[in-house]
Image 1 (cartoon, rainbow, N blue to C red):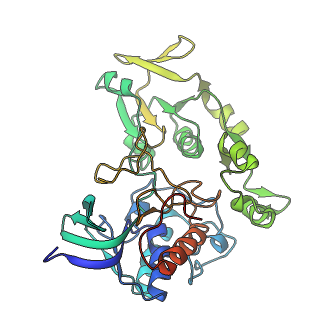
Image 2 (image 1 turned 180 degrees about the vertical axis):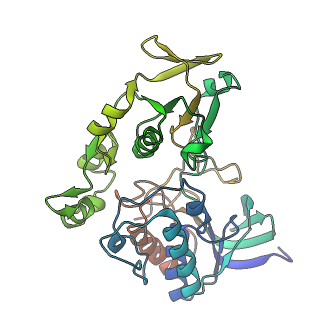
Image 3 (image 1 turned 45 degrees about the vertical axis):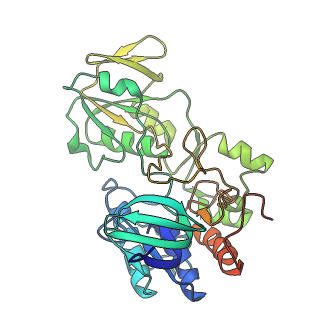
Length: 357
């Protein structure tokens, strides 16, 4: 291990989850570092589409120790979130190593060797806080589309002028898909929305209050994923803030896309459509090619219980439903970070496992 920078804990990922954990580790006096591949704190938000606005009001968007600035009842844009995260890291002097791309995490004795683009580190514990929304998923048949059809995954979408005028097929009708479809329809393009089923639509305001005021009062964000109601909520995505009935009067809903031939996209009902462009709002997949520790299932997803993996000393943070409905949401991830920090700082050794109480 000679020549390696040595830490008690290394956090992989400098987004909201990694920063919230860093806040608690710093207060506990833990020797740690946060490794992030981006050039600036908050860049994961800066690189999302221009008009993206959070569903959650600012009063619910703060991380531990620092309220989100501005009108507490207003909804911040993505650049505002990015700037807040950058200010948060500066405010608490968190040791974030920027431009540090992790290339391998592997066990080395009772510790971990973490190899990066800027050098090697060793640590007693590693927390993977890289999120679950970083590797775009597109169907295999996307590559069969004629090169003349403009294609972009939602992660690469910024604004309507990336796409040609004419007919645009948006595949996927989660929150991202319906928001992009609405923006494209407003830009004068004809939009087809391809989906097998629509999630349940909820308005941004209910009885004069923001939806998340009700969620916080009713404990919705604290619903546990392993509970009966949690399993029911997880089975159907909520569409928040988009008037779906109004949207479906502006766009044409079509069946699920199943294949492509030339310039045609074939739908599940046998219909063929010939779009000028396609937006794949088809989500993400778990992808940790640098994680050389046997804690992933056959799909490549983490095996864990509330972020604790079967391998001693290796943890995850910021995953959807890691503990509750709010586990991957900006204003609620701090709760998971606090729980994990308490576990890390209370342990006298890394010998915890999936069956730990």
